[in-house]
Amino acid sequence: MTLTPRSFQLEIRRGVAEITLSRPERLNALTFEIYGELTATFRSLERSAARAVVLTGQGRGFCSGGDVEGIIAELFARDARGLLEFTRVTGALIQSICELRRPVIAAVNGVAVGAGAVIAAACDLRIAAASARFGFIFPKVGLSGADMGASYLLPRIIGHGRAAELLFFGDLVDADEALHIGLVNRVVPDSEALEVARGWAARLARGPAFAHAMTKQMLESERTMPLAAAIEAEAQAQALCMAHPDFREAHEANKAKRPPRFEGADPIDSAAPPAPIAPIAPIAAAAEAPPTPRSTGPWTPRS
Image 1 (spheres, helix red, strand yellow):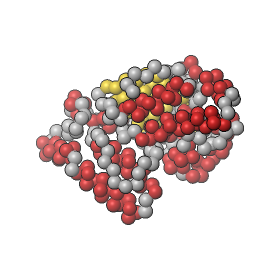
Image 2 (cartoon, rainbow, N blue to C red; image 1 turned 45 degrees about the horizontal axis):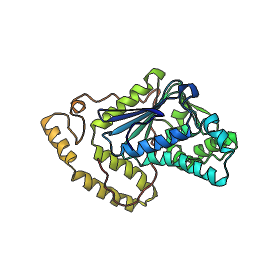
Image 3 (cartoon, rainbow, N blue to C red; image 1 turned 120 degrees about the vertical axis):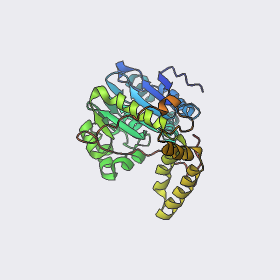
Image 4 (cartoon, rainbow, N blue to C red; image 1 turned 30 degrees about the vertical axis):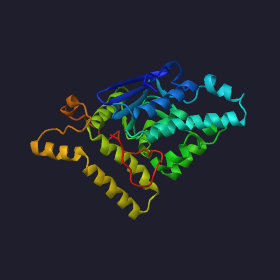
């Protein structure tokens, strides 16, 4: 699949892929086509020059979930087999985000509900605009809160109790509450959310892609390991990173008092000053979104 989606915008520049959902008149509601193209795009980014990804929405919303006219109405005409086919398609999107061996940052502007909230949760980092609202609203339409991996992702981000509350009641959470419970990493003014996400992505793109991919894998793999197994897995992972050229380059750059030029990074970006990090107080906090598990043993990522 080439990186030429028709149903949303994609730009890759200086190691950063920026995906913009572009149905602002529908609050970027998802259609069958968008689900398929997003999944294929995240799979294809594995073979692209992108070293980090920003995902955002155009206009007043990040993503309002499945389109009522374009998806929901059609589901009532499907039999059980057809419904299962659809739910597997939606889950495949989340899996493709989590399995991409690149950091993915959500710049959440406005509403992120239903599938939109799960997509944000699947990203590794989340920057929320002050006007952002999150809602795992499935129970409000008679569905299980456990949809598209929500009951896997959410407890790992905010804990079981908070996750149960959101998934049983389906209530909306504003940006300040999302920050308080650890659902987002930062809350910034509306006009700054995308720029902060871009700054983070640019900083990641200048960094060691091999090591970032290993970090993403270890964050997930170690969740099911006892301590001894986790320490051994990290020992093997770190040994692989030490054998990678980026380790020596960082050492040489430090001795020469220059910015490191990590393998594959844009040489112009490598010399640029690092992007600033949004302040943690009074409107910032930290949380992490885990990727979907693939393996519990040693693993060699591609940069």
